[in-house]
Image 1 (tube, rainbow, N blue to C red):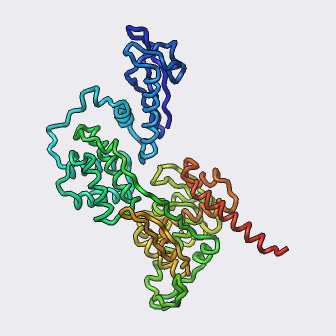
Image 2: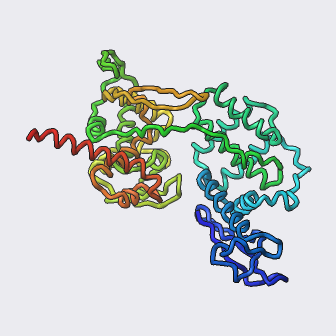
Image 3: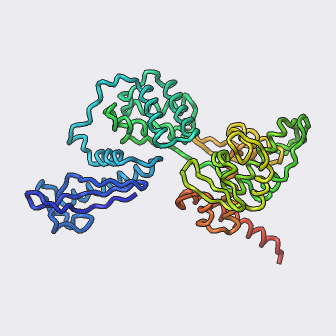
Length: 442
């Protein structure tokens, strides 16, 4: 995010030049005036040089600089919260909010012809944005969840309901009545913000409190679940028991129990698919969409569903062996690997992890209704399809491969998204050095 200021070349009647703001957010740039002009001799390139200077409208240099700082801080906060690539109109709208132009200009008229309800407008929003932003299946499911929560909260809700009191009621409902943890509540609140900004642009509402009101959410990062080298080796070489066979296992407290194996064939396929993600860094959606035509002798070519990047990913003996195992398989749509739904895959992974004995206790902390909650599960219960991609990243970094090389495979565009994995890799290497030192016994 960057905000730069410069002066126009055309002067007003007082000989002052208007200040223009060049605002760039997530690669989208908008240039706009901010309604302030200054004497060019008092301009230092990005700010007014003298705080005591007064322009023709009696604004002091200190006041002008304060206004410029307000714009920068507003866009810094907005950029941190924004989860999509904005339009130029959205940037202009946020500039109006930062400058409080809604007090200075006539607001966009509400389209009186529109008699749609809140939920009819929500349907229009999801259809339009889903097409423009090319939402994945998971994103559409998130908005279905948002709609479900809103319908249960208030079936006749309107945008006008969401003043500060209404927003507090919505957040309280999600926390106390629905029992959501604060991280989930924050996501629902951000969805409401996104939807409201869209409605403001369309002129469907004037209620913009949600764009300014910021409730506090207590969010604790979830533990990053991945397999270490030994666990990946165990899973990759796991012989799947036959259907109906009972296997003796230990729970995370060391107590023995029996588990009956079901759907052995599906478990074998799920094992191969997860390991393929762990050997290539693919997300489940990209592995799912991989076609035989995308596979060459040394590479697979993937256009990622999340970022639309076209990535060549090197094959290694393990990933190539899995592809070879299914190369003669007849699939609908010419898939390179068997097709399993994400939901089924997640269930099979938990069964596989249980058979492998991945029962290490994992504790996660969250906040529900203001209370700190600790929940402990065996590791296998926390396995999901994305753990395959995380496994690749963590093992690659801990083995010494530079982050910039790993990012070429994974498609990450900045170090911010890689930092949690880099921290884990550093801890893994430190633990390994301690193990080495302890083994010397000098």
